[in-house]
Image (tube, rainbow, N blue to C red):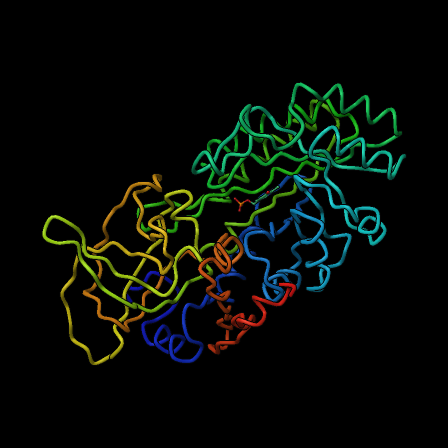
Length: 419
Ligand SMILES: *Cc1c(COP(=O)(O)O)cnc(C)c1O
C-alpha cells in the first residue's frame, strides 16, 4: 500500500465512485489513537486536553473527541455554539478568540469559559462578570511556527497580552475584583519540540508573577509529519521535560499547576485525506512542465498556496487491472482560474513550484492528498469560482464509510442572496 494516507487503493476508488469528488475522508482509528496519545502526555499535577476545533470542526469529529474525554478550545463564539450543538458540555469549552463574541454574556451563562486575549478583552470581561475567575492569554515574547503566517508569539504577533504588560493585567484584575486563575500561551503551529519546551519555561516564569494562577495552558502547535522526511513531535519526550519544570515550579512557588494543552494539528492532520479526480493533463513544452489538473485545489486546501505547505500526493489508477508502471514529473494544479491554485508549491514558498514524481496519470484517475485533516475543509476558499463545498466522509473502525457532511448544492450557495 504505497499510499499517502490511511486509505488503500481499493478504498480510494470506492470513495471516488460512491461519494463523488472532491471529498474529504477522515479515519476514526487515527483520530482515536492521536487523542489517546495526547491524553497520555506525562504531567505532574493533572492534564486537560482541549481540541482546537478550528482545525476540523465537523460535528462527528467533535462528538468522537467528546466521547474520549477531550475538552474544546473555541476560536470564536460561533465555534463555542457549534461545539455545544455537537454535544460538548459548555463548561468544557474555553473561548480563546481575537474577536470577542458579542453574545459572550449568554455563553458565560451556559458555563463556557473565557480566556482574555488582550487588556481590552480582560476589561470587557471584568465589566461583565466582576469578581469571577478568568484566564489570560499571554504573549511570552517568543514565537514559533512552520512559517511566519503560523507564528502567533513574539513582537510581530498580535495574539495575547504582551508579557511586559502583566502589571496592567493585574491592575484590571484589582479594579474588577477578578481572579486570574488560569494562564495561557500558544506560540505557533508546527513548533519544534525544543522550542515548545523553551516556551514552557518562559510561561512558567510569567505564571510566577500571577499569584492566583492554578492552571497553565501551553497551547497547541505540536509538529506532525505529513511528508515522510518530516518527524512528528514526541509527546512523551516533551511531556517528561514539562513534568520536571512543573515540579520545580511547585518547589519554588508552592503551587501545583494543572497542565492544559490544545492540539489541533496533532489530533487531526494525518487523520484526513482529500480524494479528487484528474480532470486534465497538459504540458508547456520541452522546457516547461507537465501538469495534472484536479477537480479540487484551493477550494478544499489552501495550505499549499498560502504557506507553501507540503502534502503527500499520490495517483490511483482508475482500473485496478491497469498495469501502467511509468512515473512522471508533475506539477498538480487546482481547478480555480487562479495561477496560485497549486498543490505542489516549493516547500515554504507559495510563489515557487516544485514537481513531484508521481505515477503516470490519465484523466479519470483518482488523486489523493494526504495530511488533509487539519486546516483543510475548515480553512478552504469556499465557493471560489462557485464550486460547492465538498462533502466529508468518516471511515469508521468497522471499515464502513459514512457521510458526515453532504456536498453543498447550488441552491444552498445562493440561499442568502436577496432579490
Ligand atoms: C490554532 C490554535 C491551537 C491549535 O494549534 P495547532 O498548531 O493546530 O495544534 C491551539 N490554541 C490556540 C489558541 C489556537 O489558536
